[in-house]
Length: 193
Image 1 (cartoon, rainbow, N blue to C red):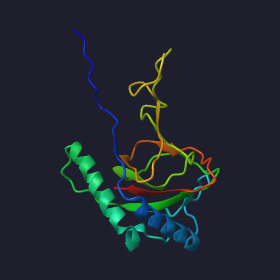
Image 2 (cartoon, rainbow, N blue to C red):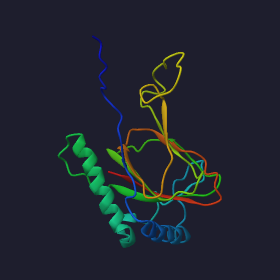
Image 3 (cartoon, one colour):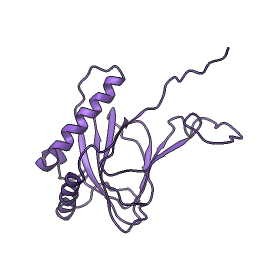
Image 4 (cartoon, rainbow, N blue to C red):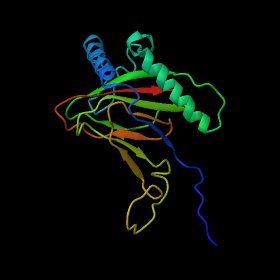
C-alpha cells in the first residue's frame, strides 16, 4: 500500500490579532512620524516602498515599539521550538515599511539571518499581498499538465495581510509584496533573527 510522507516541508508561522486595533493605530502614527524624520533606506530597490532598513533609525531603540519587538521575539522562539531548536533567538534588526499606492517589493531573501518575520500594522483592502516562492524554484523543472494548484505543487503561495497578523518564516525563503492598489498606505515592520 502506497503512502505519502511530507519531508523537508516549508513552514510559515502565522499569528492573528497579535495586538489591538488601538495599539496598531498608535504604531501607525509613530511610523508616519519616523518617515517624516528619516530619509528612506533600501537603495537599489525599484518598488518605491519607504523603509528604515539601512538608515540611522533604530527600531530596537524606539521605546514605542518595545512591546512589539518583545512579542515577535517570543513568537519566533515558539516557532523555532517546533523545529526542536533549544537556542534562544534574538532580533538582529527590524525596520518599518510604508507602502503607498503603486509601491511594491521585489522578490528577495534575508541573507545573514536564520528567521525573519513581518508584522502588519495597517492593511487597507488591495494594499498588496505577500507572496512566497517555493525554494526549489527556479532550479527544478516544474511538473507538467497540472489540473489545479495546491500546497504540494504550487511554486508560489500568497497571503493577504491582515492588521495584527504576524508571519514568521525561514530567512532563505524568497518573497515579494505585490503592488499597493489602495489609496491608503500599508504599514508593516520586518525583523531578522
